[in-house]
Image 1 (cartoon, rainbow, N blue to C red):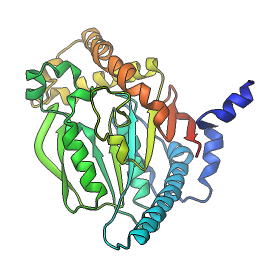
Image 2 (image 1 turned 90 degrees about the horizontal axis):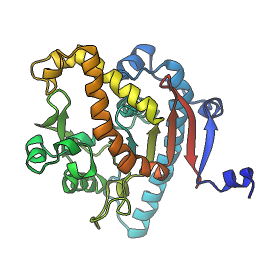
Image 3 (image 1 turned 120 degrees about the vertical axis):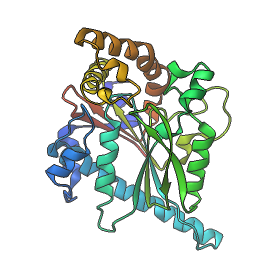
Length: 315
């Protein structure tokens, strides 16, 4: 079989940056440059060109998908003879630590909320469903934080089930990156039109995780996105972010990592590289990267944090 035939049989169709940008069509740019700047995370720069070339076409695609899914829901209600209930369109966003998931999630939320029909868009991260540090420490899992076993999966599944059944005033726990722990705070999600769920392992399946035979987070998604980058880039971005945090957030006495604020540059780099190799890289290779092929849309980032290729699953 030649290379062209292989590409035709591949589950995803891949577009260059310029090819993808053309798919924006007439989708309007609804964010200002200042708004885009405020949406970016630490050490994850994003430009107006990035939003226009990559995220506006995604917004258009999601608009089409959401409309089609709503049509299916309406057809099902007609079949069942029911008129009540509201089923939100749920988007899953996965990817490694330091790849830029938070920025992507916030940009998408801002764009989707400005569709002409002004939908209600909510964003929830799975960090809030991590087990408290006290529990992780007791179970010997503190060094496995972010791995699948470190989450309160039943609570996350219960939350998503309630959202999908149209329940009102569903709450989710909040995670503090400063304190590096789950807090007592809760956020309320009240029947959104669109819900974005962002997290490391949200595309995991029973096949990829043995010993679990119930529903998984990905079962509740109508569309899924995987944000990808080469391991060497992810490592570099993680170290750079650690160094920036050492100069900023780590100086807060409330910070879990306050003790690292006084580290010299070489010590801080060694510390960050050690955490990356021992924890984040292992999680990436064993649990996160294997879920990449399951995504409906794969965004491949290059050295400058720009998305260079986009792969869309064939229907």
